[in-house]
View (cartoon, rainbow, N blue to C red):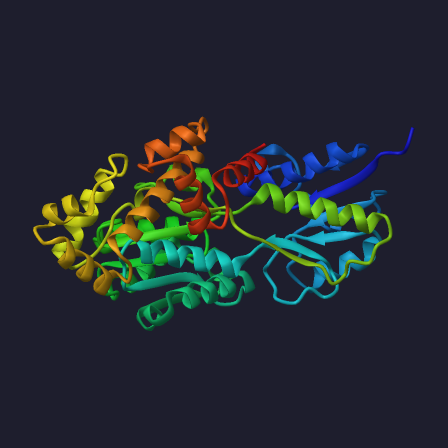
Length: 394
């Protein structure tokens, strides 16, 4: 019998998305066979366990490690360990010859911007860290997708380590002061869900309503953060399972002697998981507001544009011209995007409906029409999107 390969996972698996990464590694190891994983215990002092880190692996007779590498000391230890290491951290821009697998942060920023633009916002904010590469990349993608709207982008950056040294009340007051300076309504992308939670808490200090005054979207789809926020938090969802799988695949090839020092895999996010913090369409024009509200209420009923126009109190021609001029898209394009968004939400449920039933529930005239619209909007078929979600959560 072959000697089992010992792989250490050196990052905080107590974080929900990190646990999903570990599951991706586990699934790859099960497929290969003969993998034994050494994992990081919860970083709670009361557990009596020390967190697994790179220094703790010195002298360990293992075969490889998957770690979060953030500084010079970490890089020095990688050289000292003498076995393959893959980096999961996007903290630094440079890789220093250590292969890396992570989320496509630039694309995550673009997806966040697209979601907020689709909600009708024209004033935007970003809250992140000034000295962290992944924060800079998310901001760059966000700004790029906003296009000319980026002229009204308000950015609040702090040193990442500063949050550990400031009292909560001081942090909330600083954020609240900045939030009160923003033009309303405004939509904010926070670098991750924990920062988004802090922004939401600061809104209460500032007397601002979410999402009526400020819509907020985070990053990572951390269910503990997102579902337990008030209101619940919309978030960009990593494909954490695939990140873990691809990291394991790199480690496997490196253990076989392949030089992958230049590898830098950026895995596309799964998409946006919509919740209450962005569940509102903003537009200063009352006709647009009425038309959108009617379309969203009648997604399943396949509303005719004549009926939408009557509800808004104008002719169909006037509605179409006004909608295009003020939102950059036709009413039909908005309706199709709303249907696809609803379909994605349903597919993210624990027990989603069948695809053919979903096509009916979203108001499409036929299943082929649903598939065509879904692919045109997302670049995937509904079945591909469903299978990707299943792979990530299995």
